[in-house]
Length: 207
View: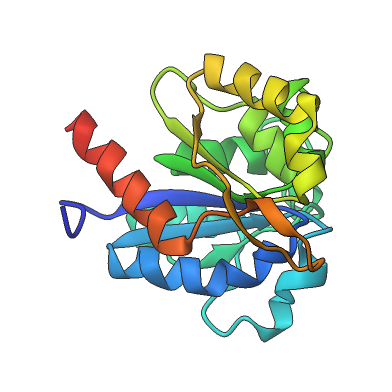
């Protein structure tokens, strides 16, 4: 399956791992597969991905989500955007609009901090609010963990991933390589191509 039969809407959560530097590459690969993409970067991820240097994504506004769902491409929303759009009852709520817009959620990279939040139901930023409000019965969530080897091999990591997998979340397993800290071991995010291929394959199984 080289391309999707229609443009699918992918919500890409990016968290605080050095693997966030691969976001631009990941976005391009998904664009090549005919996906619309909205990125939700956590504050920690922005130390690595440097939004002001990303030429292929731009800051979105909530009207982008409601005006034409199928024409949104390569936008990002920040935590503070949640409160710029809501002032009183019946105003649109950003994390709900993002949930409604998306067909699929991918969190890549998924750091240890956000993994712990998701597995315990915490929702203290835009990304975790969207995931907490996700339609898990009908929409897939993919997780691509990325962290130091000792973090990855800590018993809590497997326990937390297993909790999320019982909800139907799909883990794209970390790989072994020399990490940014210089240590060789498990914990590196899977390759961007593997992430894209895994999602395309799982979508094909559902058609």
